[in-house]
Image 1 (cartoon, helix red, strand yellow):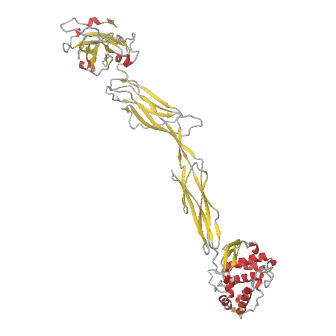
Image 2 (spheres, one colour; image 1 turned 120 degrees about the vertical axis):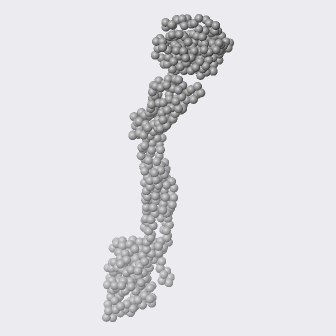
Image 3 (cartoon, one colour; image 1 turned 135 degrees about the vertical axis):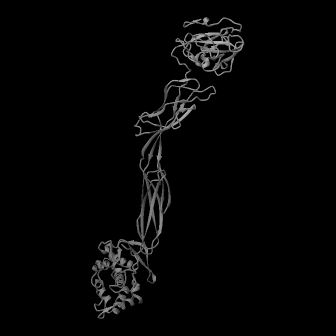
Length: 599
């Protein structure tokens, strides 16, 4: 055969005493392993001469099967220049640059090849690679098949040879498999809710004589529509290295970079802290994309990962050309991550009012009741504070509501029954006098209804006057002058004998009664009982019409105003309108029984 200016016969030595190789030796492709298209002069299934890469050249014993005779052989790839010598160490031997002849030894039995070395072996064919590059400028190589029947080294003239050509410029080693890349992508965003709280109550002030009061509170929590932010895309990039050695162990590849970007231009952070040396088939890298702005309406976000690598030789004697690979995850879905979507509501009185979450009624109203006892006298305030605490950030806020419950004002005032009994009479008759004129009588006479009292009355005479007025108290008839006169008289005496600056504090009142402010809008209608007792049945009225429309006056101011509506002696009062007289009477009666409320 003549190929690229080389005559195969010219390199075959004369026969010697050694046993020559019988039959034929050919090179061919192996499509079942390497795929089609590597033979450049026909299908080359049995005898190809021109290849597109030296890694695609296989030893084939003949057109149908190994056609050399039974025996043990080795093969070598030789440089066509100079003396042919297939033995290791010979200048023309290109195979011994990679391995020794023992790794290239095979046997043939009845046309079947057996081989146990590290070269690829498939379909009765042995891959010649790897071997050094030829010096022939036309890319010509010589395959030698030599019998070991006479031992080693062999006589070159007794070997079989076949020439083949590899196109100049093709890879000198088998190509490695390119890395591939895949990924997943999951979008998310935060919706942060802001909550508010208010607290209401059905009433804030109750004035009542005795008993208890029930308040109904309403705690209302509400939230806004939520604020969206912190748009992110996260996931895992899988860079796959499909290169393996003969033991199916991964052959490492080093990549230059792994990048990830969103279609809106966001550059994502890829965690490459594990290194860029791909030692596994699946090499996983996490990434995070933090978006400066939320996706525009109707905009579909995609996510692309890319891996790049430089040219490199791998440890399985393959060559990886420089390149890159990318993968795009289309239409990233964004999942809402609600923040502070629930709040726990508590109350200083009612305790835990429960969990309120987005999706429930907004605003959400929670009601509860509180019952408190009315103090015997004076006022008592109760503060209730409701608080919410959010489930994520711990944000909190509160709302308070204060209520006040008032019993009657404690004045120390005494009733008409007291002022006509011996204790009351003793205080009156024992009062101070000036030149024999009783000071309490002079003080009473400043009020028109009591100007029928003698201006020179002694304290004994004042006592008799008081007794007679009280005994005459009557509310029957068309007018109520007598009853009003008696109740107002008792109030006047309460004022005089509770004030150290007037008649002295003879009744041990806590404060001078004349200066106490009375709520005229809520006067208890006193029910007089047997034995001179009186109670308040929690039936209330406004007596403002009897005091010029005032809502509150001091006791002294009430005396002065009521007196202004009377003639001297109290026989004509409030224009003889009994209803108005009754209002004034009720006001003084409530003061005397200590069931009036402070303003």
